[in-house]
Length: 415
Image 1 (spheres, rainbow, N blue to C red):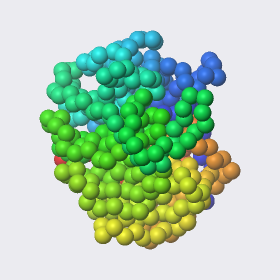
Image 2: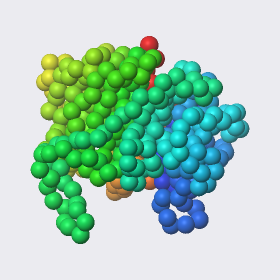
Image 3: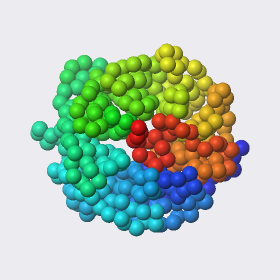
Image 4: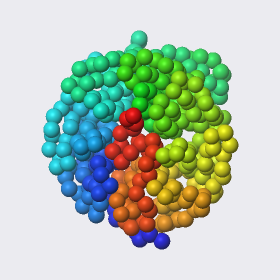
């Protein structure tokens, strides 16, 4: 069994975790809850932590936390409000010492706010929401995706309308009424947000973006051309959930809820190429093999699965519990993740081993980082856990060896 992990308490609930290099340090974004019990403060803290668990430095920024995006040269990018209470969004670059290098203001129209962003090789790609998350959409308001040069100059902007959606079995609540099943009919979403997980992925010359209706969780994924912003295809509305990059222009999109439980591979033209009757937190290796733990809202028991190209699935070990930290895949083909109070590995032969067990079954968790010397790190709520000397190999190559696609936390596949 692996030794008890080192624990580092962050200022508040962790929102994002990234690293520039397997040797660290790790960069953690979290809420700042130190002065109040309010869990939704409008302040972000960026913390640098070494692999031994020592805090190197901290910086604070106005606004709700986003995941940090790290450039190949180690520059960390943070999206934040210009000042407390401001509607203007700023993107700030910080070096490995915590020193601000520069800030860029990207053209947008307040009260537009950032839904999600990624770093491109020469700029940014940003989902703009028409108003702050979870607020009523103003008349005529819609989300949009925009690409910018490093200078902040806009290259293109494409509207992402979600004007009418439908899905059988959707549950809604009327004023002074109980939750009830909505019949299959189109309705106009009153609030827009980005998909809770993997809302913005870039794979070569294709971008996948997920916009949904916060009230129901029903939304659409849109495939666009990276160079021009032209819409290539749009999925049918559904409860889209976990996603992954499978290769250049190819994406895996999972659906879960309202009776849906599937994962579909979309090709370069946005056509469904294959569907599997499962949904989970998948990783993809250099050979394109897809595997990972299932995630099913309707059951507390599921399995580790391997998705074969012909639509069949190989069954791995049973998994109890539900809440799962997004896994990482090592170069030997072993997947590591946290589930129901255990640090679990499943090897290439689909044999399970629990490296560490505890009664701690907190539901709020970050993705897993697989770092140097077999170090595994992830967060549970406001605590960063660091496991040393697990015996795991380095992070695997491939388009999606961990959530966000890489250690740098930037889901962009450059080809």
